[in-house]
Length: 71
Image (cartoon, rainbow, N blue to C red; front, side):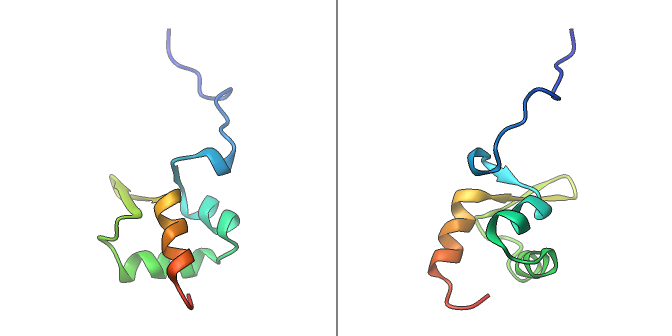
């Protein structure tokens, strides 16, 4: 029996990784700015590439934002 994911909606604050769109909503940072941050730091610990799709590791990106003076 195949796994049905329509009932696995995990709250955004509990997700381990987020899409660019989810991260933009969660951190109140524009999608373009998050894409630029990833482009400037493609090997940062908070970036996870799944194929050609970017995922943001929530806790590590929270640390990055906490330590940043400006984005």
